[in-house]
Length: 399
Length: 234
Ligand SMILES: Nc1ncnc2c1ncn2[C@@H]1O[C@H](COP(=O)(O)OP(=O)(O)O)[C@@H](O)[C@H]1O
Ligand SMILES: [Mg+2]
Image (cartoon, rainbow over all chains, first blue to last red; front, top):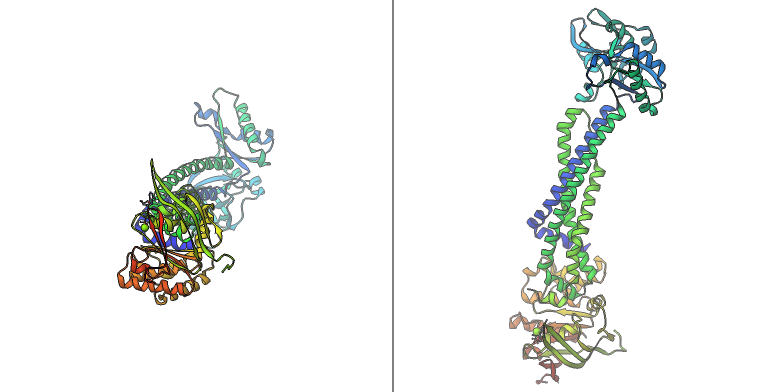
């Protein structure tokens, strides 16, 4: 269309001016989109990391703020009592960990040995073998499921290690499963233990004072998790004689997710504020330059009117000029924002979290499009209206 | 053309008063005349006599303060701005002293502009503009920008632009005022040719030599017609 052709000609004839005017939009849109890309990839990374965490269980532990920590420590007997008395509890698993030099012949490394159940805390996929069965739990067998990195260290020649034995101090465990390689990055790598054994075995071999400290409970109905958590904490207080100052706390996946989403909610508000401010600042720049453009071309507008251009046609011409100016600015902002987001994503977030987030193309395009439309409408309309309203004779006489 | 209204222009008791604060300037003090289709009229008079004001009224760029004006059978005195724009687009072609071409825009696109405003599709636009340029003798300059053309050539482009919508009347306010005498002669010859092909032309000039090309001269003084008739030489 001729309006676009003419507007392009004008914008290119004043390259420097057009570019300077667009700077506000480029920076504003670029910043908003970069933050948007980072926010969405962080959210993706965190959700990806939490994705392997079982959502039918919660952890309960004494709250760190209380005076007498030992008095509140969860005992094995507490766990069995809760299993029996609190509804919706399917299984209680003591938490813990023992640092050992784990050996397979002369291949060895230090790892934490941790208890787990047949319903694992970390349900990431398996590379080899299986998880614990309920009979492993019931019979407290000497078996182990090992992480991918410990597999690489202990079995450097690769191959299926199931059926082979590893040693931790005086104890021997038969490897029954190997977890698949986690996505790169420390969040995933730290998640869950490296060497897990059935919790019954763990209790037999390492818990001699009957104190677990903390526990994980698997619930039957995850939708009633919150109520169950409250009931468990209440029951723990009862079991510990309702002494003054006793306090427990729980963690579950939805709590973590909620907390993280809260952080992203704040981020979203910050982005919206930056966006609004840069929108107004950039818009004023656009309006200014469009008014200059209208004034400079007063005579041209007079000629167009003398030739027979209607008001609407003059309005359209300047409106489209403003639209293109905003469109180019926002387009460049989009490109820059996506590039910055992509670079930070590649070189920081992926390194840290191991999660490769897809670029939020649609959202970014919508943001850039919305900026273009809003700024054009809010700040391009008045100059175009001024041009359309000019009196042809006065405009023609303008020097 | 519409043969029931042989008059291209019918002006009665037209006045134009400019008010600048408390001061009122009467640029036209009541002029009445008609111009038939196919006539070639020159408007003459000393500076400040109201020639340009009259042309602006005739060109529907400005409204008369009082009086009536019928253009090609249509009473245009009471039309709103958009209807006036439509009249300028369809029935009038305007040629200015200063050419008033769009800079940075080649001759062809300048000539095609009125067709764009008239809603003619792109390809037809280009063809018609090219034809019109050829008619004013610039068929080979279609892609030259105004600053690559001489004054006379620019005025030819402006004339082509004024004619491209096939207007009922061609108005020219001192079209040779910025040109040397040889180029002026060429432009006047072009007007003569256009008139010979039936175009109605009204032209302002303060140069007797130029005005003598016309069939009829209307002389103004202080906003009034002081004489109206064929050039003295004929
Ligand atoms: N926009 C205006 N405001 C006030 N006075 C004007 C305006 N335009 C023209 N005039 C006055 O009207 C008179 C006629 O002007 P004009 O039609 O331009 O004369 P010409 O073209 O014959 O030289 C002059 O006295 C001029 O000063
Ligand atoms: Mg004049």
